[in-house]
Amino acid sequence: MNILVIGSGGREHALCYALKKSPQCKELYCAPGNTGIAKIAERVKIKPTDFDEIVEFCRQKHINMVVVGPEAPLVAGIADFLEERGIMVFGPSKAAAQLEASKAFTKEICKRAGVPTAKAETFKDAEKAKKYVREQGAPIVIKADGLAAGKGVVVAMSLDEALAAIDEMLVDKKFGDAGAEILVEEFMEGRELSFFIATNGEKVYRFGTACDYKRVGDANTGPNTGGMGTYSPGDMIDNDLREQIMDQIINPTLDTLREEGIIYKGFLFAGLMITSEGPKLIEYNVRMGDPETQSIIPRLENDIIDVMLGHAEPKFSDKTAVTIVYAAKGYPEEYEKNTIIKGVENVKNALVFHAGTARKEKNLVNLGGRVLGVTAVAETLEQARKIAYDEAAKINWPEGFYRKDIGVIYG
Image (spheres, rainbow, N blue to C red):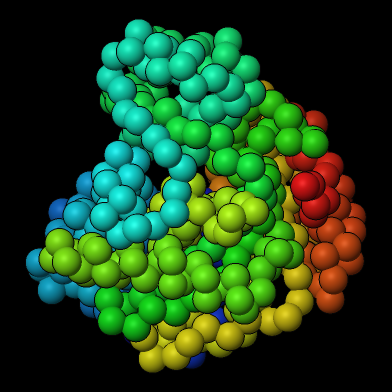
């Protein structure tokens, strides 16, 4: 098969890593890709949202399947656009992608499906939202309704923090149209788990779990980010919990979408809170997570293409993977670009997945905020953690930083 991957981040690098290992993969392309991806796939200078150019490229190169990494082209309808032109896509339709595009839509689906989730109200007016928050009290969660690159969620531990978040989203328009409507959710106690499935529209396979570290600072301090590191599998997961999640959350959601005439196809990421009352949905993402993919994929033992086509259930190693995200200082706020990164070639005992990287005058430089993911796989969480940190220390990037507690279990 000739395969085109859409995207340029660490998630896409990990997907390319898995696809390249498949004996079914003849030619592998990535649009637009990154410096790390260029070592295993041919980069294509096409934007993920330039659908006409993607179609033309697919026809020129006889692409058999397109795998879409990021959410933005999915929400814009890339799967529908390509499939209408006879090109197979692994990724959900525009209608299905509403699960990530609109948190309000997801709440409505959950309500109809009976999926356990946090109580929430939606607001477009800041004063009405503030009145509701004062009535509910803190802690409380403020979320931008639309896509905000993993940064549109504020877990407010105080009333002042909640009111400031409302102003940021509805008054200051920090997230633009994505924050034109907000959700105010009850605060859920428990531990977070990232739970993934892969489906071809008929067969539904569980596709691994991970625990993500969303806050920028050690000991879970500072603002939310797109993810500063992960380990896989989640330490709290067992077969009973897996079945409970499938029976109470995943399957009812897919069934309710089907009642609406929406057949979900692709990866689905359920962000869950494991509470004393059982698992509850925090949110859905309509693709693999970043950086969760960088921890899950290295544990996959069989052919990812067979999984995508619905021909085989995924098989994962019993080992544990730890991914440390190397980010630019200042992230998730302002940060410097085009700073030189050295020593990546010194990493021998771990995988390095690239995200926002480029080559300039033979130097590896950063273009984004989250730039590298160092992933180690070992028999135990502690062993994988040690290897990952030992290897990350070999990278020389004075303008970068990483959390020192990835793999430490809190709560």
